[in-house]
Length: 372
Ligand code: SF4
Figure 1 (cartoon, rainbow, N blue to C red):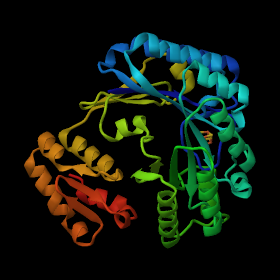
Figure 2: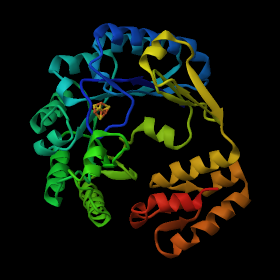
Figure 3: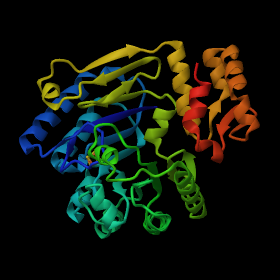
Figure 4: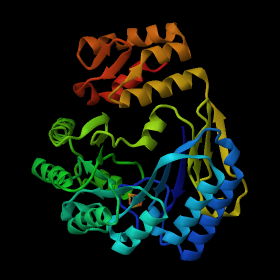
């Protein structure tokens, strides 16, 4: 099964922690010209996908900055040019402030069946600090409105480790989230990305970075509270009611084939070729070329498998690792893993090597050790 990712690099304004490729305040004409280019790319590259497409994902940026007319044209292009599996997962990322009842109903009627909402926190002071445009009530109302419009599969993003976020505020955020009709939740620890406005504030001493002990405590609270509410953790940052794992992200993590279209989108052929589109809307619209690419070496493929598998609760499938890279690589991996297995940070169970709850707190270190 394959996936298609459509990147919509438009935002109403820039959040101060964000390093994604997007542009604020683009005119409707630019958005339309961009959508035309994406349609052309989807048509030109249709032969790159040889599997049935089971997931389609519109991400950004903020896809809900586009009209439903443009979004409908993009979806139609996909369904007309690709072999779509029965009951595909079709996700759109949205910001709460864009979501009127009418807009949500139109999104559902043109074919989206999964809604991903960028909430980050339900605390109004923290939302202001992050330069988000919605407030807590707007976000909660948008989730209810989405359900009312027919969305049964709603996911929200939360962040923890925000400056000035206390344990009490975090607990409030999680409890508010689980009181809503959502099936999935992604919770990311704030990272201070270089060159972002928030990172500048950190370097100036205007905001204080949360220390590791506090972050570990927050992670415990998050996993524990969500587990009690029936959300299975299936990846380090992702939690879902049973049966509602993100099929699209799971395809990324298991090395599946996906085509990414639009400025700055990435593609992978499911074998060893990775491609990335130009990160510039104007040049993308002028279409001097669609992408650059690289062919991954065995060591790079092995590292990718280690990195992506360890993030998942099911871990590394050692049988698959041996089939793909040989038993000597698997043995080498297990030898390097031994120190973490002895410390209880990695669990070796039959054909599986997976990170324990405590190990997730030092995931980067474990991953770096196990790489080729
Ligand atoms: S809305 Fe999302 S993509 Fe846009 S600036 Fe904010 S975090 Fe970044």
